[in-house]
Image (cartoon, rainbow, N blue to C red; front, side):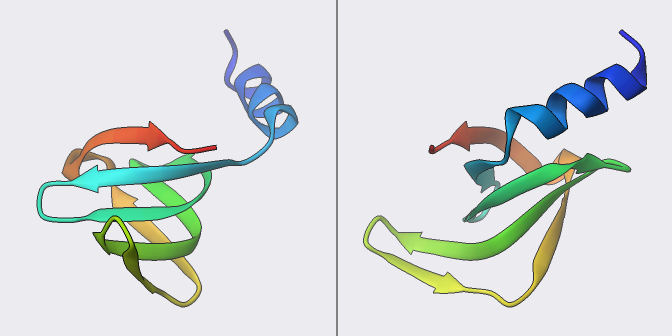
Length: 74
């Protein structure tokens, strides 16, 4: 599949709320995409426990090699 077709499909499908599980912590946010080997999240929150999280400002870029797995929340 050509790259431009993948970008069009990605844009049409909408944004997803995900949780990136890293080696030492987890980060929630709205996944904008994966560019240049980095996951880009908007509205990020660092998850400390199931009922507690710390909001961060702006956007976060997480290197793909540091992510253990990506969990789709909604």
